[in-house]
Length: 320
Ligand code: BYC
Picture 1 (tube, rainbow, N blue to C red):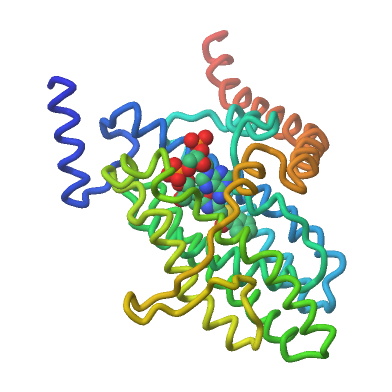
Picture 2 (cartoon, rainbow, N blue to C red):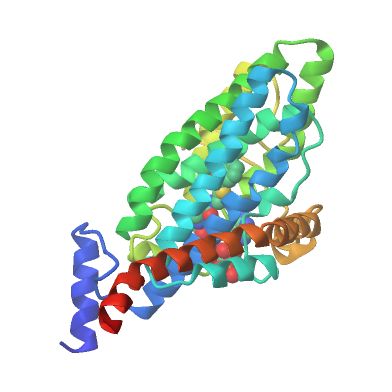
């Protein structure tokens, strides 16, 4: 079959909603963009453990500590499913990890902001995981089978994360005036970075057109951002808190909110490595990698020994 025919067959499978599986023929560019997106996503889950991990030892009660610990462990699990999904496309996990550690790979801009008070943990669960779910529910229907299946499980866990965050926000908003002020302060700092998670405006998104054609993405960055604002603003109202956007208004005609312009200069500066915590995050990941060297060595020595044991009877038979 010619490459033109292969490409037409591939697109027709996508058009009729058949999932693309690892051994199927796929255009190089499809493989490349999926490895890019899935590995960036995996890195985001791994780096995403850091801002919340910062509060495990300072959670205000044993119950909160247990929940936060479970959530942060879930994020590690998500990273691992996603690295595995990238491996099904032929990517090498060590190469991907090295790209993260060297600062070459991107990960979500949101994790380069600091967690300054306990209410930030509520705001992350509610807003950051809320934004993540909005994007990831769409990805459960992405065209690449292993990515779509990983997303189903991840979304179930993310929705628990979102609810635990909102529950913290409810407790803070209904607490003392100081607690309510902490909750408001957390929204003020996390609102705009959460909107940035959806990526550049559609007009400036370099990958969206092709990703939509291949059904890697099912909705555009701006569509998802709008959906997030529409769902989240009433939740802020229920808390008795406000969203830090003077331009936010309900638009009766379009049946959704109008909202202010994102500070795109800040977005690109964070993406390029100059956010408040970029350097700290990479240092923490590099230190974890170095500290874990003995575990990797022990695991690979064990694997080599197992392999050798398997071969020993064959060698003995040969020698006899
Ligand atoms: N931050 O053409 P575009 C989580 C990059 S983790 C940094 O629109 P695309 C969680 C983009 O990569 C949530 N970079 O790209 C974990 C591209 O750069 P390259 C993470 C960004 O791929 C722990 C360039 O800008 N979720 O849930 O079509 C605790 C142009 O953008 C960002 C995912 O990763 C950003 N915010 O669309 C709690 C979901 N936005 O590659 C929660 C999977 C854009 O050309 N990813 N860039 O150098 C996606 O759905 C898509 O990749 C995006 C971007 C919507 C993010």
